[in-house]
Length: 303
Image (cartoon, rainbow, N blue to C red; front, top):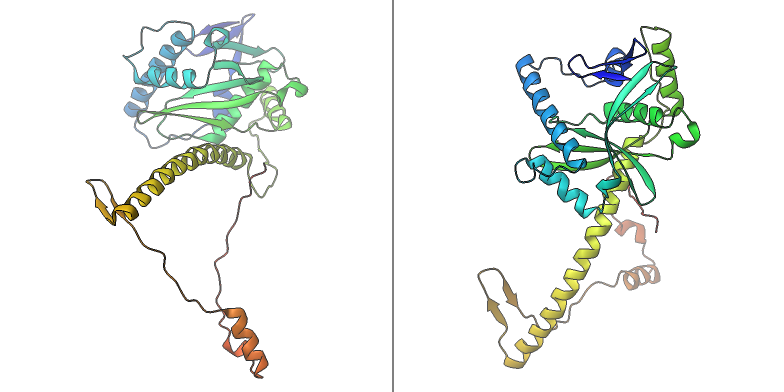
């Protein structure tokens, strides 16, 4: 398999293969940039290629862009924090399928926590998750050689560089049968392909996002709980000193501390009132007030 970067063309045994990006565009599954001036698109494409190349070199061991390119610095920080072993990672690996005459180059692959990760680098201002899901799912099909048993075991991720920040997100896997149907449509030269997504109350993308956000909330909550515990320990010590010195107010440039003595509060015992009304022959329903609450949805985390 040979790849002509200038033409973005894959050739195997003198036969031109369809690239994954061409396939997505052909069947209307790629992001729509209609209305954006060509000059803007060309500038963004040039920047994207430069970032991809720098990241490819960095994965390969070249650290010359550290401190010079923000995206490489962000990537390095994430890799270090996540304990990803770049010596075992793959970058810009080419895969193809001789049956469907499809080829593509995968930005980043690595193993982490007994999972094989198939990842793509994106530098667009907005992230088109469905397009990324299709792209990575087809890459996954090529990696596994179309083996359905292995297809669902790989994990898909996108590294989104935008506005000076890096966002790493899980990406849902498109149904195997739908990927096969797309490849068959292209092989048969069909002009259209209609992706009929199984109707669900929640999309795979939202499931992935909720799972990711929940994990982050739990992780951050544990840190907050510990900080609050440490703060309360200090406050209780300060409270005892305030009582001891009879000095009940402290002000600094950042906060105020005010000691409040124990107070006796009175509140209505609704149970006793209800019993009293019933004992005196009154109708408790006449004293009830109806209100309509807003609807909502709750999420319960499985432990």
